Amino acid sequence: MKRRNFLNSFALSMIGLSNYAAIKLPFKNFNKKIKITLTPWSLIRSGYGGNDPLNIDLLEFPKVAKSLGFNFIDHEMFHYPPNLKPKYIWKMNTIMEKENVQSAVMLTGGRGDIGDKDKSKRKKAISIYKYWIDIASDLNCKAMRNVCGEFITISHKEKLKCATEGLQELGEYAKLKDIDLLIENHNGYSSDPEWMVQLMEGVELNNIGILGDFTNWTLERNPDTYYPDPYKGFEIMAPYIKAISAKSESFNKLGEENNTNFKTMFDILEKAPNFIFAGVEFSGNEISRNLGASKTRKLIEKYIY
Image (cartoon, rainbow, N blue to C red; front, side, top):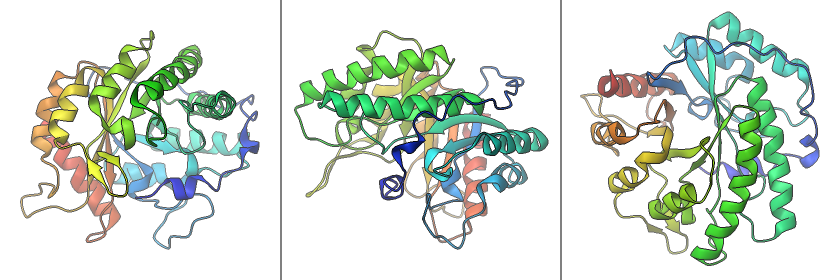
């Protein structure tokens, strides 16, 4: 799925809108037990300006998620209106409270690279994502996901240095808001697990971590090359994984996912001491989106409970 195609439609005018009063709800009954979350992309597959007849309205998402058995939801920045107002955040918080659904991770990216070699571009990207950290805080998210290193334009070593500097700065701001900042393996250098570990080790903050995606392992484009072993990749990243995107597309008659061995993945995740959010991201089209999300949730439950 090419999310960046939707992300590019956002206006930079969103910067600076973060200082508003919104409902700040308590995060109820939060503990070390793994939380299964529903990622909006499972049901809403277009961003602002997109057109998908199967989409639901974003403000309906908490109610639908609850009906599918989810108590936690993620948020994706490109599903929110570009002229985001305090009243909209208030509505979302009110609906979540009514449905007894809580926020988990705010998913961001595609509006600049916090590891850009060009320091002016990096500064602009960090400013944009500081705004989304504020939004994440107002929605009571515990973490925000970002991406860096997905485009190979400079050397491995140089990109690591730039990404470390950007992650340190943005992570410090996230820490002030009590938000964990997670980097996803999202192609390019970030799909090299050794590079991701080096990135984590280079930042001196305890609110930094990895959001591990089951299927994002494209190292280079044209021709495409891939990290050869996703399971080994997860094992290498496990000490830093705090959340995952459990991607699913289709299932066999036993309810197992056809492309990824969920049992193997969750066996590996037992070595992830800080893992807490298991995000359901269904991208298939052979069955309904609601059914796909429910099947993925049940498959995760099979291996974590």
